[in-house]
View 1 (cartoon, rainbow, N blue to C red):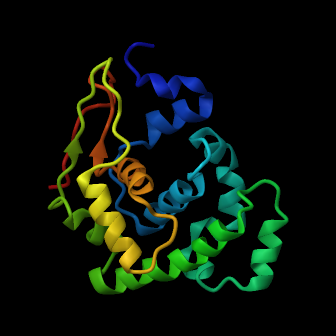
View 2: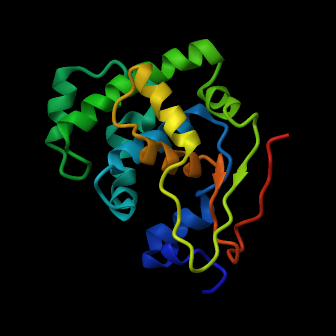
Length: 189
């Protein structure tokens, strides 16, 4: 398949994610939170592992309902740490709860997390154009700036590389290869 980003051909999960989700504009805050969680859970792991565990995490994390997650107790943390089907890293699970609380603080201030993120680009998609022999970026000035702001607001596990991947996941960056049939760009307005 020469009309699909080559990384997506490594597994069925990656191909499905690439074709149906990656770099598509996401406006729904619950979906945005889900992708944020998946990105920081992925830190140090492969995206393929995360996609294979995604449905288990969806069930364990109450469909990524940040309001419910923000109220998880220590008993819930212990319960989650015994679930072999999710990422069982205590620090990441604690970050899940912390980040849900911080996510809602941003919503309160900006009326949605979507508004907060997209104000950084004036609600415009940034098109990354990659050729066959170019190495893909893993961070940018924008991801560093957003990461710094999120950390200042108390978020955990959101370094600039994680934020860069998150920005791709929600469509702020369109990073499809030039030859990819999914590289068409669309803006929000």
